[in-house]
Length: 339
Image 1 (cartoon, helix red, strand yellow):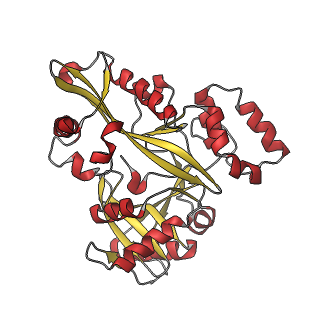
Image 2 (cartoon, rainbow, N blue to C red):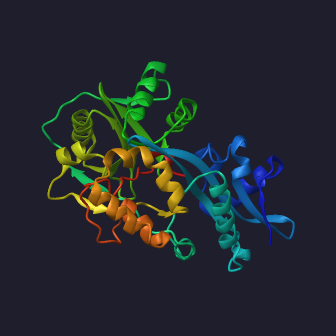
């Protein structure tokens, strides 16, 4: 079998397969993930053909991640699917192998996959990253005013949200034009989203299967974020606030007896240890103490799966949660970058 890159002439066919698997009850993967299925990204959509038709596919979206003073090239993997009549033939495995090859050619040593199954685990992807969920109850003391962000809002409002995001220490790097598409689409972690903004913060809300508000992305002044989320809870009921290890101040403001540590909503793999460390050098030069250097040297002797868990932390690892001497390094959450 041969893995091919998608030509524009077969884009609709690939979307139809993706819709059949992921949108069987209606909807459009192309509409929901315009960056992944854009014409400029076609060469990053891989497929396998059998009997004259596309029977298996995998989408790659290359994104940079800001880790404090360092910037790492990463690749997001999504829309991995095989036609039911052609499963069990190893097609997804071949696609993932080719995805790794292409990623390393593009100098992307970090892969984040929107899924967790035996295929990804066999490939070496693991649970990685340290995340928290804080329960923010209604009837809290905060009465901060907020407004719902709408498509018809001003350019100044959109620019403000883009600016707040750009000042976060750990984040997916977004081009303004891509961010604007995300705002217009108003979708996060594969669910319809509402975007709220106050004078110094914004918050992206989705409802889970129980109808509960989940804040899956936020940026701005930590106190302003906390007040905004509390205000939304007052107006619209309890909010589950999702944060990362990088949100130190926000975690301190919102932590309570109901705060829980949670895992990433997919799996992660470091594809090349040396390449990742080289790209992380600006951060490591500032944060590594002698003990941290010793830990890093120990990490370099691990296999890629254990290395991934140790560098970024994991619920599957007993690695110390304290962010002392560089490790674990906070991973961003998907938010509106989900593919």
